[in-house]
Image (cartoon, rainbow, N blue to C red):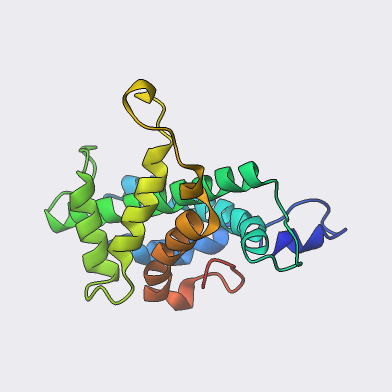
Length: 199
């Protein structure tokens, strides 16, 4: 789905390669069995929609970033915001999965709603999906987190200007998409047959 397949006539307008339901089998494997059923249901419901949104963003970002048509696809400030949104989506997927893996690891089924420290869930996610650091999951994920955190506007007077180059294709999209790869590879047979989220 690059440049949303040039806006085909049928179906009209934008579309996604997969549906949210297509992501359920992969998510059911990725969420550990020891988590409370209601927590599992909510997490799967949230993440399946995030994945479809990530596909649609990638469908616009990649042809712009790679100049597949030989020219720009998106207005540059819009592309930077799309890269930011993609990073936020990837961060959310990783945060959700890392949190439940951490909770199960410490004997908590998640039903108490306890907040999980970022270093704890990042560690649990990496242990589950990239234990040998072969895919550089932690480095790519921490870069996605940096992109996500840069847009906070709550302390504007106490920090430097945002460097918008931090939100470009190479600095934001590439590491965020790379962070997804070891997750998708672990249960690759259950990844939807049509997705543009693989490298």
